[in-house]
Amino acid sequence: MAQPHHAPGGRLQVTWFSQWNVRLDDALSRLPESDACPHALFRLLASNKTSNRKWIALVHEEDTPVAIAALRQTPDERWVPVTHYIVPGFVLPSQPDRLLDDVASLGITVDLGFWRAESEPRNHGAVRRIWFEPSFWMDTADDFEAYWRKTGELYSIRAARRKCAGFTVSLNQPGAAKSIIEEWGKNWGVDEGEVADRVAAAEYMEESGQIVSILVVDGNKKVGGITCIAHNNELVHGVPFRNHDYDKLGVGKYIFYLVFETARKLNLKAVDLGGGHAYKKRFARIKGGKYEMRVCGNVVKYQLDRAMRRLHRATHAGRPDGRAESDQDNDERLVRS
Image (cartoon, rainbow, N blue to C red; front, side, top):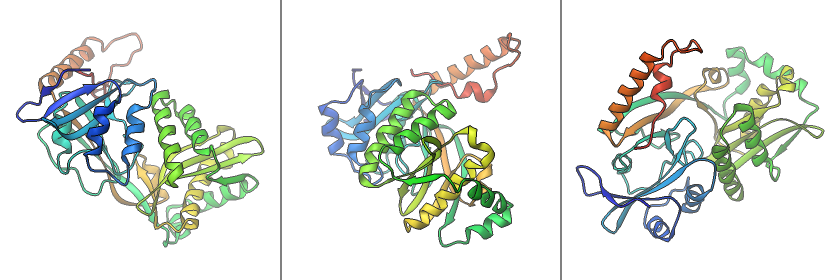
């Protein structure tokens, strides 16, 4: 455990822990609880043992807890909250309106994702970069097919439904969420630590009915599937996978169709496909979006790291693989101070 330190320019103190403990339990019980991420779920993600390196910071003013930041390190050496794109509408437990102050007090660089947040993140002096991506959304009372006809997708969706009609579709089958997330991880090469945290969160949310899993099988073969989250009466697109042996049948579009159909069956208000991929606008309209920001708690080290990466890029521009690292490649690699 690191020794407590005072955040520059304020009374905040930060104490680091390598694992969950009773002091953190006590602090968590004194912080506001979110409907999106109950304390039990946050504790589960913070304490879940995975291949990712994790640290937990208690931000406090003397004996009063202000926030708990549970962070995991990604394979490209970024630090993100353990809830990062796993729990919608939530970053970490903190006192109201103090989130960015708390993250800045950590003294390291942290990437935050504001996904389905109630409001836009406010500005802060420690923010070094901010991104915005539109999200794609459709009310379940809308005429899906009319929209898909307009975007040119209706024919291909109908063709996919016809070709996949012989497959078995199961909704919320026991163990399906875990299976879908693991297949997604294999499809996309996601690191095992993130997959393990997503599975742990999904199994927790299954008990409360928040996770909606759709699994498509052909006999004993998995054809594809998706996990979604029921959040604020909307079905939120989660992690999908498909068996590429079935690509010629349009399995990917069939799964998209099943998400819309399932939202209606469950009497939910809307479908939120999220952002990040422009092709989604062919299935749903733009509405709102998500913000990502890089919060830097140590400006001197952050600028030094950037300068060193530029120097490395300049001196290795002619390396054997013939590819110079891009600004984006290098800027995404953040090293813990």
